[in-house]
Length: 138
Image (cartoon, rainbow, N blue to C red; front, side):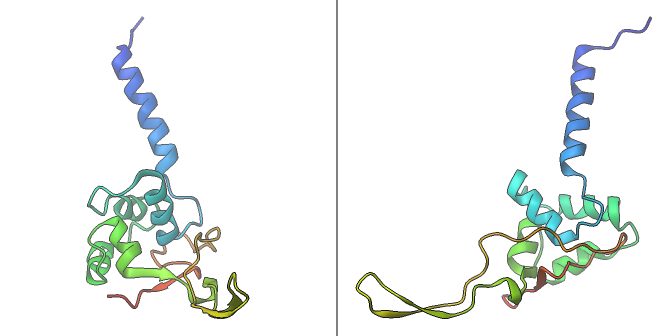
């Protein structure tokens, strides 16, 4: 009977848990996936999650890293800061409100605090879902 080293077994368990937490959902788009990964794990200064997405869901997107870098996304979090922004239909529009003194104040439009569930893309796509658009910041 072959016995496993406790360290090896623990490593296999951790690897399986990590894979389960970081695997893209079936119809999840790249940008929703990156948003979820940044919320859960933060950025390590690389495109590790973008590469994982490509490897798992869009292996034919061989130019993905170059495309993201060309949009200012040199790491996973920069893709969210420089390359893509929440789509305009998710923003709170500019509107009038009343301050504590009853005076009218103009409230500027604002990005959403949270992004709704991914609207989905077809398998093999590295494009964002309708919740995202190219950022105009870069």
